[in-house]
Amino acid sequence: MAQSDSSPSTPAKTARPKTSRAKTKKPPEPAPVDVVTEFLAALERLDTDAALALLSDDVVYQNVSLPEARGRDAVGKQLALLNRYATGFRAINHRIVGDGRTVLTERTDIIEIRRVRAAFWVCGRFEVTDGKITEWRDYFDWANVLAGFAAGAGKAVLGLLRRAR
Image: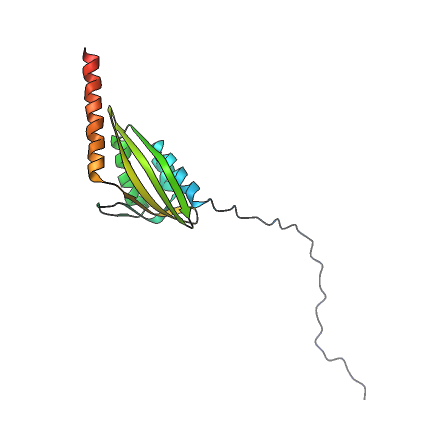
């Protein structure tokens, strides 16, 4: 008995033209310390848009002892106050340390409102995920902040008195 070839025929493979698939490498995530450094630098320039671009949509921001701001829009409203009243801002980092996605800063913040220049100590804790700040909490002593503003106001008044002479 003759055997018939009843196996299903396999379609002939057609040669596909070789296309070069350039593998696009995703750029490496910036280090969390670099994100925080860039964020503080944007605040120093009073560039709210650049600072907000480094925050996640669901960021949580808190000056501890004050209510939290939840979400980029809420944080944007608080940062708008800095732009509205401050004529200058500086964050002098004494220490900045990263551990995984957590970044701790020990710094002196200087806020200038016209002739008043107030300097006060701040400790900040930032959480960074996928190159965006997801949590930002600043801790400070209100007495230190008030003393900084009082000293700044006093220096401003003395400067005005010296000019008046």
